[in-house]
Length: 328
Image 1 (cartoon, rainbow, N blue to C red):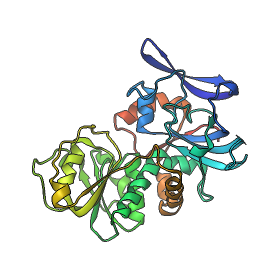
Image 2 (image 1 turned 60 degrees about the horizontal axis):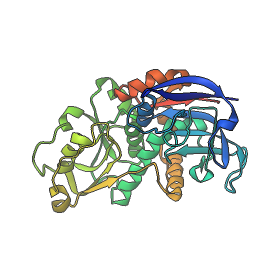
Image 3 (image 1 turned 30 degrees about the vertical axis):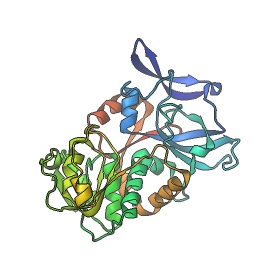
Image 4 (image 1 turned 135 degrees about the vertical axis):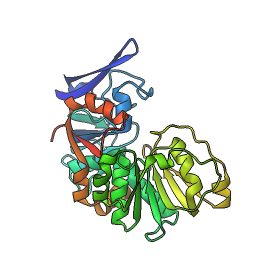
């Protein structure tokens, strides 16, 4: 038997309970992991509140990522006792996820945890931090170097934004953070922000197809009108790594930034990301993300806290990274 947060649906309403389940109920897979930590992402908030139609089959165990120790394996790449991390692959949506003491998954979805990363810190990174590193790697791959100019991070006090800020600052970039929460300014400065701007200043497009060149790069987790406002402000041949939709899915813009300034809009997919790129991202995270700054982002939680916290994250009221202790 193992402890789990189980979602059920009745008459279109989703409810949750913390219960004990038999291991035989675990879905198919070739690796069983004893889960130590999980985390709370925006997508988890949607799932826990029955929003977004992300889950089609109930009962369901949510949690889009987890870190733990291999308990049993029929996969040639993993053996019992090895520390692993999982993000993506629609775990926590289509497949049972990390809000349980045990998970059975495909070994191809797992990544061995770098030796200098604990399971707790791995989940302080989680899907949000992993996505942030993919954004950094994408910008670097399109020519961003320290000294090129200001790099904008939108939604900076959230999970993706917090990790992105810390990584970019460590790499030597001048990071400008956008947030609407004045109480997070000291927190962001502690992560390495050189400047903080009110999100209201970039919440609405000006209506001009091009504006003064301002940003050498941008990591945008907001989308919507914010992304539309930022694109005309990008420098020549600069790139935006787009990874979120907290501000909406609709993008109203023109082709002018792309065909006049050569601006690149880079879509970041952390769900189906290839294994080799996953391993490289986790290696980079173990090197380029300062551990003390990562610890400063953590809000500890337990399974019992998730119903409350899931509403807060949807309201934009979670700062940094919620790390959920499962079976540590």
